[in-house]
Length: 329
Length: 310
Image (tube, rainbow over the protein chains, first blue to last red):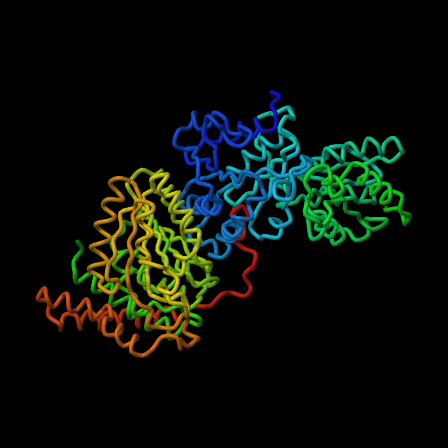
């Protein structure tokens, strides 16, 4: 167990998989040394694995489209899309990769083992074209898996699993975690297993990525007012660990979903609905969403008007936890 | 160079398949009259070469090694096809044919990626990316061509220029020859009569030997013509009769016959080959036509994730 910064944990996971499996490759814009990728995320990898870590043209459709071809040809590519906003350029290729196995009926045991790694997130004031967390688009695409870690240990473990997985995985890393260090135990983490970040009795907060940090801060504030919040981090949005969330909600009777993506038709809405369908009698009152406003993010400090905040989570959790209704049995 | 009669046999089989499939498969994008391109290119490939075939026609998958029965099962949406009757794009993973999908232009990135795999495996295998004059209008071509050049990928790009992107003529879009594109990427390029299977094969062999030797991309434009409508369920009022007649006179089988006659091959021998091809396809149709179609009891979500099948 060693402490690593978040981005170093991701790099270590890619490095360990590349050392273990010669078919793993990494490519994207500016990933080779001495630059080593945006924010030096991949520093040293092209030197350690010459020919397997490759700079691409500024060409997102080719970056992702070639990953599909390479995966069909027996490689395990990690395709780096510098920031998630640019993934829209390659959305056609990503959707097609996600469909490939199903639309060909699994013919000849077709597998598409590829990872699209990308940076997401706001709170840096860099505006609508550099800040999005477009998990909703990806969740809406059948065939994708979506990993969204919130700790260095999970970043390492989920990236190991993503590379070993035989399906198309979108791996999100939040920019704000850049310098956050934490323990990394070097073990792959199975997809579809949520982590309970803080146990609680009165309200369930479900959050991914940087929203987990906000939810934990909100839980501390709520504790001061006598509300004991449970914070659940699904870690992967697909597959989604509904059982852990339902079990929690059955105890707390109140649910708030926290999502940095836009509110409408996003993960926050989907999780609420999935819980209502699975456990219609568990909640004392309506579930509540705290997510990004349905506007393009402004640049500069104005973005904070649109993004989730600790205060908004606290208010939603208070409203959810204090809703009167029959006490769940 | 392959046995000229063997190549003619594959061409005749492709023709017999085209005639059969366009009669039996709804929405078929017929490659009738364009068989020489797919047959000429794909017959030059090894089993471990990868092929991204154009969506139109059967010539390329047939010549790459996909059996006639399997092709028919695919186009007739039989549950016994490799794709279990879910899709009518030919897939034969064992001969490097991984399927297709309906967005023209997405083939470029995929072919480049298969080129990465071919290079990585280190056996001088290549990837061939076949596309139409319509796909050549997509920006995805530029991105994948740049990638193939900068990474020195063993990819042969083959443009099947059949003059029409549905109803729009290629020469109304391209200011010059499509093969001119190769110059900007410093790729060796050739242009051939796409209705002459022997010319297509010769040009493919020449370019491929260089692609294999130096592991760099090359470009082939095969000039042909779409004598059928875009799909079999629509008309093609934008093609005039004189133009169609001109190209029907240049039918790939007629061109092939003329070439073989010069080599002293007896026309009766070619008649026998064509008759045999028709019998083979008819027999195959009889074998597969009563196969079950897609099973409605099958879980529609099956095969979405590889992890669910293990």
